[in-house]
Image 1 (cartoon, rainbow, N blue to C red):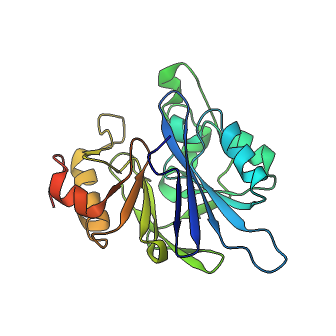
Image 2 (cartoon, helix red, strand yellow):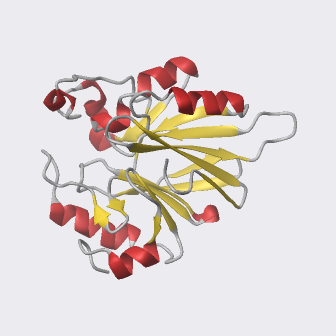
Length: 225
């Protein structure tokens, strides 16, 4: 598990689940419940064997309304179908640049692993600076290409937290040796879209431990502030 598996900030609860052979961090984000209604939640990324995440959602009495994807690489989409089946109907949303990737094992890199995989959707295409609303809370979609062309981060300003996918890790960054990756584009995305967030912003990455923007500005050796 990531070091902060449950984060509660300003009415938002974020639970982290580290799943699959690549230790992919997936998240369940929930808002406070309305009177007489179960609390709404989003799933962010769904890796291999998401049963533990599905069970936690059910045990908590949450109501999933959307499955958001930071990008469409295999280890972030392998459990999408299982989650959609568990909570049908559950719409899937991804940036428009990678809408085709869910159904293409070459683009989502699953063919390279010998595990050709497809995922349902998308039902919705995301765009840069779009605002999504969970309960009473805004979430801003930040397009952060480089690791992949449609990579996005999900920024919750009220909770001072960003779910960064594979763009930014603690003292590291996402790989850029894949097809359709670019180290120059990723560095620009981090500097202009993530490093410009408030320095106290918590960063929840797609792999590894949580960090903060302030820590990465000071210590990240790959992209200097």
